[in-house]
Image 1 (cartoon, rainbow, N blue to C red):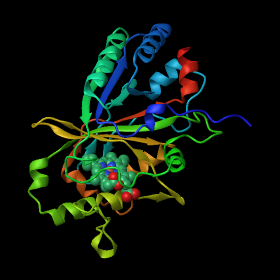
Image 2 (image 1 turned 180 degrees about the vertical axis):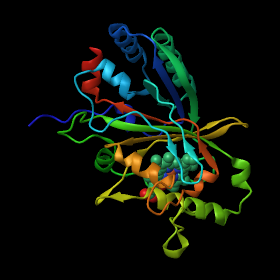
Image 3 (image 1 turned 180 degrees about the horizontal axis):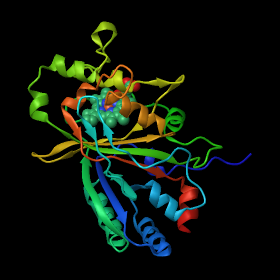
Image 4 (image 1 turned 135 degrees about the horizontal axis):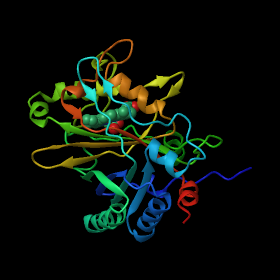
Length: 301
Ligand code: HEM
């Protein structure tokens, strides 16, 4: 029996306090130059977790022999009540994280020094951990993530036997919060929007749980399969623009598409996630993070 491939180690490393998001649009058509630049990046960075992933076009360019099943570029969504999820799909995404902002920032500089010779920077954001895993809306984020290594792998990693096995599909979206609006509503209304209590972090039950809460719109089962994903989002921002860098790993694309459609009211009941009235997606991309073995083979390092 063939050995399972190894997910990139940074995906499952938890406990970091600092995060860096770098997205690039390739501008070189010289495949060996691109691979060389990426190999230099990965060889030069140490002491920091790095996950590298690719958009659909970039993967086809760099690895024309195969594509993970169902993988595609992010397409914009037009919600039922005027909310939009824009696509800002580009080519290469580096997710860096670690305990110390100095080493994370050094790693971002090293990566950029290499990548700027083959690509244009399309997004850079710095994320941070906030009051023990809280989002800036004051609720803990990540609670319902799968807990054991096995469940995390089931949710986040493409299963053995499929193209791209050992790799992960990724959804990233930068969400900008309207915290003035959010903080102007009473806590019990915020709890109804999220679907959990703020202080004790307990899921609302029965008639207490609105069917347009964030939990109701995202705790989904499709064709008998729970749409579990492994979320690693981080707050970002300044006193002016601020929000959430949403980042989730999934074993199949339907886990993301089903939840986004449900949040934006593109389902039979046409209800939207009430969070959309307090936060706005301003970017959106799908990525493929190949297994360690497939990444090494593709880059020849
Ligand atoms: C403004 C953006 C968002 C904020 C502030 C946010 C915040 C939260 C919070 C506070 C929870 C409850 C605690 C937890 O289980 O983590 C939660 C749960 C969840 N969120 Fe989000 N989220 C956002 C966007 C999204 C998006 C875009 C998706 C998927 C496409 C998503 C998927 C989920 C899932 C799957 C859960 C767990 C549901 C369950 O209980 O099984 N979230 N989110």
